[in-house]
Length: 181
Image 1: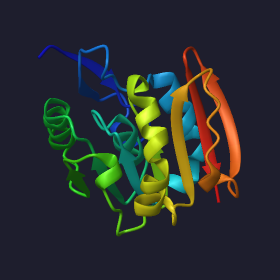
Image 2: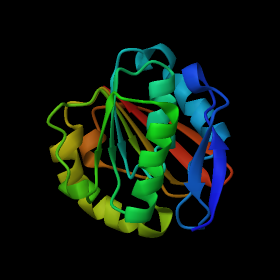
Image 3: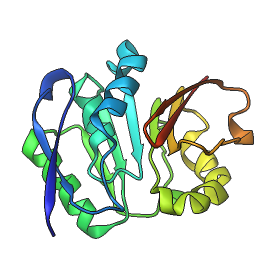
């Protein structure tokens, strides 16, 4: 598999490269988007537990760990992408993490992560929306902040998040919705 490189945008690992598959379907979120998200939640990252669902290369969770999160959990089902994620964690020398090779909707976050990143593949977005209630029950109901990436023109209206304060940002073809309890 061909690989491409992307860089961590801030914190301890700022400027360090991580691998990503050079595939159209699987790509890490752009550095502009990651930088905007992490800067917008800033100090909340320090000491927090984070959950990276549809982790891919782990770019979002790695950014959080670089900026002081105390523990990161990564969930990714694609074996090739999972191998790259593990290589990235090893390359950066990160030890405070767990990785689960499974479907997001089958994962249960017993540790109740405080900050959750969700970046599902856009070509499978309907599956994510169809499974959101189960994902919420299993992994999100105790989260303080949920960040969801989605196609820019898609208005995501999730009943489970109605009581959260919502902030929306848009970039090129991506929309980012940040839900805060």
